[in-house]
Length: 270
Length: 258
Image 1 (spheres, chains in turn brown, orange):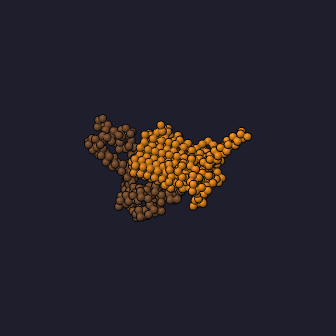
Image 2 (cartoon, rainbow over the protein chains, first blue to last red; image 1 turned 45 degrees about the horizontal axis):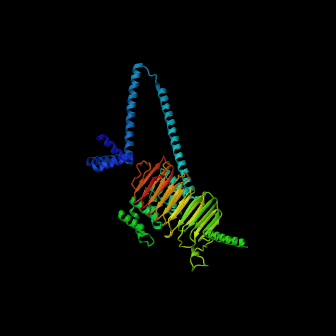
Image 3 (cartoon, rainbow over the protein chains, first blue to last red; image 1 turned 90 degrees about the vertical axis):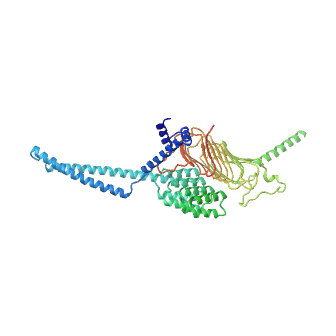
């Protein structure tokens, strides 16, 4: 394996694109060969930076700065165009000797440009509208599936299917979150409630979801759900949950392994 | 006269024999609908192609005890042994509910269930023995605390959860109707699936390991998703119905069915 091959494989390894055998080979190499390990850490750092650059959103001031720059650019361009037009006009007048373009031609070209702009704007606008309405339709359809399935009291598996439909949503929706929170707290099947927690975890950047997780700790009695909630809140680094974890430890009804989990949670969060 | 006597002896033997059999078996007509089994500790559930439920046990329960002769176990829920085998069996419409009347019974009940009947089993006590489920293609719901659950020749849909027990399942095929979810807090989960199973996998073990010999197509990590060794999302054979295997402390084993 020469160096460039190794680098490529290391990059794929970091991206998780290697198959299992190759992964094993590379991870072994990293363990055994200090040079390779060094290269691996360097690449990982570089790729990490690249990754974070890729997802960075420009802030508002940048956008404003860019807009004003664009405006300046446009004004400057307008001036240049005007100058150019003048010079062409002068040249034309000089060459042909008389001005046949006249104001009509200018008026016609202005009208043409305006028609083009109007059509263009209309097309873009209607395209946007369609996009928005189809997105809204999609969300509404998903919502309907989730809510309808969750009403099916006869089949826990069907309700899980409903909860999983919420995974298709690309962004959070207040109504869906409310339905999932109520499923997490009230469904009479533990598997369904766990599925709801996992679906909510996807939207855990929403304050309402975090609050619901923290609140659920105070009412929850099922060990599986208690442990899952504690682990999730630790992952979210949600140190507002420490008090409620302490309450779980103090509760005489809590089983020992859940107390241990809560203890570990408090340790990790504080 | 001798002949008649011999016949009478045979007849009385037959009577005794069938009597004892009916004491250990209980039959109930049912072709579709739902069966709920609550707090019956050691149970084997098997699917069959008949239109009846057949419950059998080798235990003769309170009949065995000299002191309890002539008495019957009673229960705080007011349940009565109306089956003669220690169970309260109630049928309303096409729903059958089976409750245990006595708390401590040593022998196992085998319950044969028609193939289109959905099955729900619950046991919250620490007396629960391993639950065996075989040859069931209908929907299954199991909620237990201490029992382990062993499934054989099953297909889903199913939701199984236990706190302390392990879950072992061998699937003959995987129903694409609705999801499969197996959850334990402390126990391991060991599942064998046919190699050609189409499924979307969500495997998780907070404190354990995840093992598999199947060809999992791992979910691509879009910028926002955190990938960790404790959670594996992926697909089998291009994806299909959702299969969730999750244990907080136990290992997860996902293997190809041999």
